[in-house]
Structure formats: C-alpha cells, structure tokens
Image 1: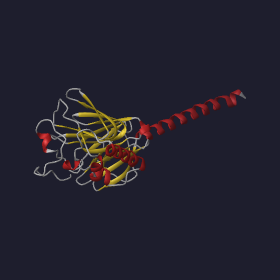
Image 2: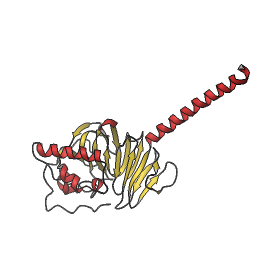
Image 3: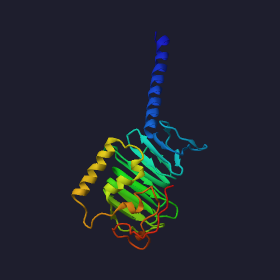
Length: 270
C-alpha cells in the first residue's frame, strides 16, 4: 500500500503547498496594486517597459507603473488598504510598495492615508514628505516653487539638497523655491477655504472617512485658531488649480498674509 499511495500523497502535499504559496503571492501583489476609481479627460497608464495607454475605470494598475494626466485632467487611485491618491492636471506619478512610496515627478497630488494604514512617503525631485496617517497635498513643477500642505495628521518634509527636515501638522504649509537648502517660514492656512476651492478635493466625491477627518480639522481650526491668524489659500488658488505661488514668496521669507490685490495673474490650470 505504501508504494501505491505513499508517493502520490507526497505529490499532492507538495502541490497543495505550492498552491497556497502562489495564492499568498497573488494576494500580496494585489494589496500592492491600485484600482482606478476616477477619470477626468486625458489619463494614461504608463506600464513599465511598454507604451502608454488610456486608463479605464476600475482597471488595476500594478506597482512600478505610472500615471500621467493631461491638460484639465484628473485621476484617482484607490489601494487595498483604502489609501486614496488623486492626481491633478499635467501630473506624472508612480508608486512602489503599494501606496507606501509614491513618486511625484511633476504636478499635484492629494494623498489620503487611513489612520490604521500607517505612513506613506511622497518623493518629489527636491523633497520627500513622510505622511503619517493623514491627508496631504503636494505640488511640484520644473523651475517652480514646491508646496506641501498637511490637511490632517503629520508630515515630515526632508530637503534632498541638504538633508534638513521639518515637521508639519494639520493646517500647515511650506512653500520652497527651486534648489532650496533651507526651509522658508511655515504658514498656517485656512483649511475651510482650501477645501472649498481645491479641485483635487472637489472634482469627485471623497469617501466619508476622508470627509470626517477633514471636517474635524476644520472645526478644530475654527475653534482654536493658531497665533497670528490664518493665511488665505485662495491667493494661490488652493493648489492644483494654478501652479503660481504667492508673490510674497518670491522675495525672502513669506509672511502669513492674504494675496495682495495687485498681484500678477497666476497661470491657468493645466
């Protein structure tokens, strides 16, 4: 009996173990991938090593692939842990390790990380920003100012040129000139005005858990405003809608004040 059934039994055991391993690998890979949940106008997937192609709703984007948006275009990706990333117009973006490490080559993104999901890192040409269980915006363009905004949670911004770090908390923004080796003054921005005006937030409905976090921070800010008041973010059009920065940022350390009425017009949305 041993000769008849022993060997097939071993084969079945090995086959079952192999099936479990393959299934586990497939599940792990799926957790690292993203699903396209919103598309506005021209959005393309940039698979590694192959030509770009138009994105489609609900398709799976594998880690290592990129996304590119065109003029007046937007996209949204949702990951297995419910981390959500939105891309503004003229944005080039890719991700690794699921939503834990995203690369923003150019353009603007909104990243929403559930509290239980841990932290994620945004890597741009001049900075990295580690976002801890929160909601953040980042924008970068060639030869232009870089902006990082923390709506909820905490972000640690690191300058690649000098290695210096800065911690931002809810309602704070840093804007940096090209090639910055030092940090400029942190601004406390009006979250209500920001979230009312931002196309990244308003172009499609956000999940309820995101809105709950945003509304809680708006309420906290309104009940306990920071010393010195709040900067009106509509001067730079709430990120993504225009790439220009406040004129005050072009001359030394910015001060927390609204956009002056005589400021030159900002660029239109891309």
